[in-house]
Image (tube, rainbow, N blue to C red):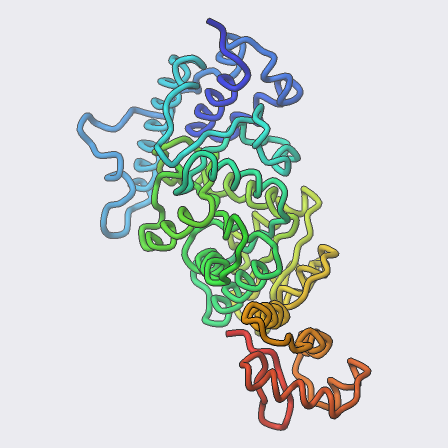
Length: 424
């Protein structure tokens, strides 16, 4: 029995889970992904080939985690030895999969809530085909039945996604900005993609989940380990919520542990899935910069959230702003960069209020007339006179709407008489 294209994709994708740069190497050898998939398994195995020895394997009985989870600070030699053990472990798994071949691994079962999407499948996200070294398969988890999971994957392919990235240790300002962006992007109908790491990633996912959007997929988490591996463990509740209402995606096969080289690989997938990437906070050498670099290479929109001058965590976003990245102070800036016309968060609340009144069979109040006022406030705080000038409406009418919107909790009155949109 000969393997089909799907078998080849899953076998090669599983091999690539244990060796960095494998797909890139194969594409370079055979000219394209299609060229790779046209080869017989023997030719692919020869091209993949075993590496030169990376050192002796760990002693028998040594737990894999002992090489990198020990207490205290390691010496340079200790770190080198630990890295050598991990590389040897990955190489042994690679060789096992190589020997099994596409028929031995390609039809292995997935977890009950998991699925494998191959390059040859219709559900494979088109955005990833733009990568020079695309994952040949994706391992996906979602806590729903097969039909619903496939529906979520179709939603991912047809919905405009935005990647929100940044440091694992943000300032309170950075964490709040990431949460607000996640929430407001979701409310505008954009799909929030991030990496489920601590800090900015977690805040962006949380904001998207808290938005209460009726979208089929609340948010997408792209992992630097297997989609069935919880990392970091502190994000367990968030991971479970994403499984329940979104998608957890990885190019690495089931059970693959987190390793340093897998996170840059993960970042390129986030960059490719998003039509735009927003960097919130990051130091000069932040890993989030890699995602932005991938986005620039792919021709995606790049935006950066400004911060306080001279702070360590503003170095990365400010560097990209100097290089021409778009300024991002709110989700409205992202929508504008993508050419998407969107009513603000408060505007959606107005529409829901109008729908609620209609559902009670009461005379519908012309609540939608407040939308010009809300759009004016989206640019910043304004007095009633300023808002009226922006909207080209009588001051008395605008003042009346502002009073009503304040009572309904959609705007707040600041000291000095200016009104602003509420974002809590």
